[in-house]
Image 1 (cartoon, one colour):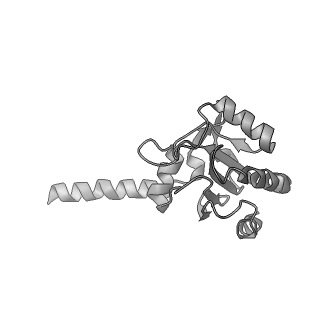
Image 2 (cartoon, one colour):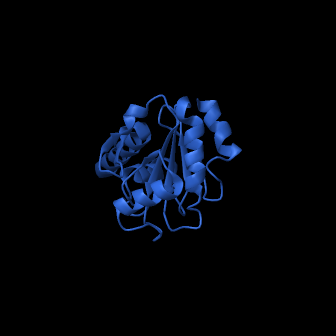
Image 3 (cartoon, helix red, strand yellow):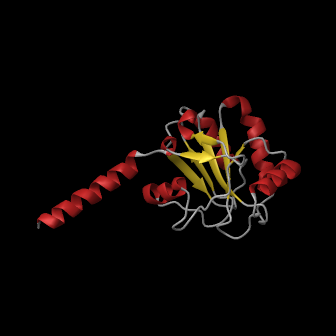
Length: 174
């Protein structure tokens, strides 16, 4: 009985710590290798998107760039996280950066290439799975976080980043 109580206590503590976390508890490296502590975005909504350069949805980079320009002065933070989890990303950060700049004039934050699901998933994506049961099922899944770092809503690849479904919620958060 005592072992059961100890096990239950540890389990509840772990669940509590997962639920107590928010996006601001994490950091990520940008495509140039610079560490970005996400707590610097407290008070600002964040749109997190797992991306890939060789995907049927890659053209959504243009929508993300448009969204970034539209909300540049309104404190929306956009973070693209290139991933080869679905085997559609280039092999090298330098190539990803060049691809994004040349083809889509990206000015929003692009991270290093990361895994977004499975055992090797980046801690942000592992946390989203643990805390919200959310994981990308494909490239260009979108996750909107409020200024407190809590997940507000997610969308599949089918929803474009500048869709009114997303921008209406962004407007509510700003």
